[in-house]
Image 1 (tube, one colour):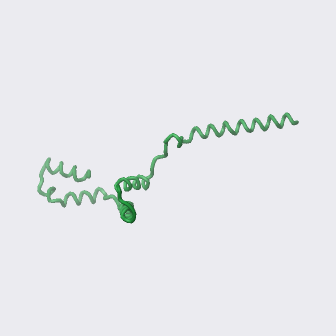
Image 2 (image 1 turned 180 degrees about the horizontal axis):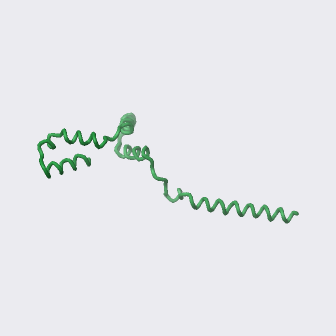
Image 3 (image 1 turned 90 degrees about the vertical axis):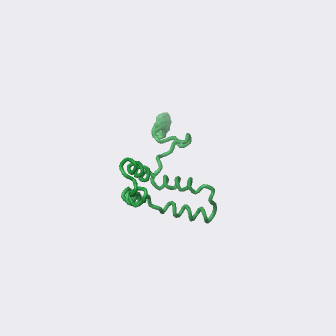
Length: 106
């Protein structure tokens, strides 16, 4: 009976470590620098952080607050702004097409 309990305990220990190793392999290895893809908010935070540059203290706080709360312009809003530009009104044909492409991509 004592021998049976020892074998059973060793079996459970071996199975649990092999099960742990299998699930651990499937998870991304954070120690080697692999990370999960960033969400929209994290991406926005990284962009704002990069744009903040050397700002410090209250100036940085204010910048980050406005940057993170700012909405990106929709395609329709960009189109309205580009069409309102005097250069767009004066240009014709390929020149206008080139200007609009540049304006909408910025």
